[in-house]
Image 1 (cartoon, rainbow, N blue to C red):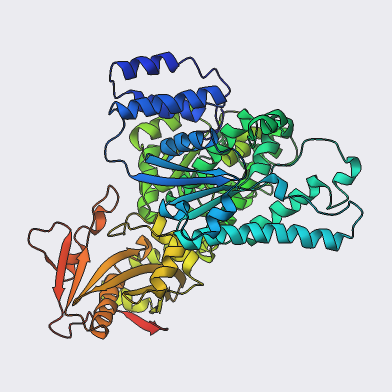
Image 2 (cartoon, rainbow, N blue to C red; image 1 turned 135 degrees about the horizontal axis):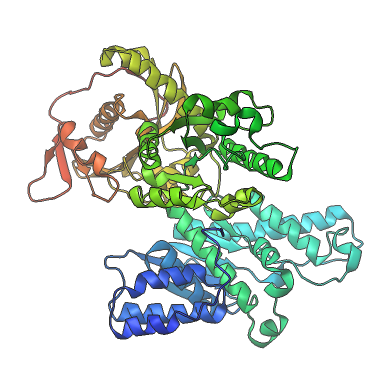
Length: 629
């Protein structure tokens, strides 16, 4: 089975007449088919045709209603159409948004960025795509120059380009995506390609590496080097197209870059999956442990298939070390299912690597629901993998929020299928990401203690919780922005902010914004709360309030209100105004404000008020340690 995310090598023009006919008939079924065809297409002509058909469908009013508008500016050192058209189309499909594109003039990107009054900033883009001129990434010296001199110049090229992108991000508040440099596909200068940084091949590789290592968190890399290598560097380049019309890549490579840009834009708002639900038999090992016994399953270096299963487990362990939660959902007797994890010498994964283990004869769909509930995560955070297509289809039907991957019967492909699914990609790793597995193991210990307690008040007291409250800081800005953009369930307004906008809040006098970290006797929950309030006359308005669902019902909500009251009094406010904007995912907080004593504002849906007429204070079992908040 091929990857979910990768386009499929099949004829892509076959459905174009059908799409045209649906548009002619004003049939709304055209849009889902456009999305499906866009996911599959690899051909330039087909992708451009789909772009034009989508535009026709939108003009005919056949697109989804109430789609958000996303503004994308494309600037660079080459001719930017038709790449910009492809970026518009792929982004519209990937983000389910109406995309407005602004295309800069040829090779004017430096002046556009450096002029604060330029049309680039007047456009107020959410995303700026920068395609730097490849001619600016060449060593100005000889192949025989000292390596130190070559390295200094390469680092300066990377630094200057990243500084330019950071300027664009800071001035616009947009996320910036910059393409790095595809490597030249030609033999010249022979062996010195890999022995001199002065060669274009090595110079670009080093510049690309420095761009990735030094980029600011508001700057994202579209890895043209990787895309060209994956496609084939000769197929990715088109010298004639450059000389005739200043096209940056071949037509085939334009499609790859546009798709990657769209994927990057979508990932800025879409959280990566957090949980991988694993089948066991013929997924983690060959054979059926209930029938073959531990000694009869196939894993390890004694056979090619066994080695492939072991390699798959090694990739799963690497995912766990990046913060992905590994769980098990298997139709098996529990005692037999756990035995390989406990005693088989070739197993890479052990019980300590699994945060939730379900092995029984219940339907997998029901067990998956239980796993999500016990981890306190939404079903759309889960990915289910199984070798059996029937099991994947049953889960798809009964738990459609869960993404399913059928691994098939060739274990040598399992790891590559999961890697190319792109479901667990992140643009950066925070400390909380790296510690997620241990956090959920600590949660299991807390749940065990809760199960042994008969008095909730005594249980909360026994946790010995300490809340560390602090104002927004530049150090925390990347994590705050990540939470703001990707938290959906306990999020009262789902206002999104880039890292640059987080820093604006931090420096703005009208705002009072703070975070909370929570620790208890089992460990550190990390940064679990983000609140942004703004002063509006005599009101303190709660603009943003989001929280990790892992700490629900432990008093954090009440302590948050204590802190908001304190800040309101410090700013001389007489009333607190809470806002609730309902979404498909945040229904769990619809009653939060009334539960905290707020009253619904008459005639204003989603607006709640609380008068500061007394020194009301919630008494909870959290000791507060306040930094500079």
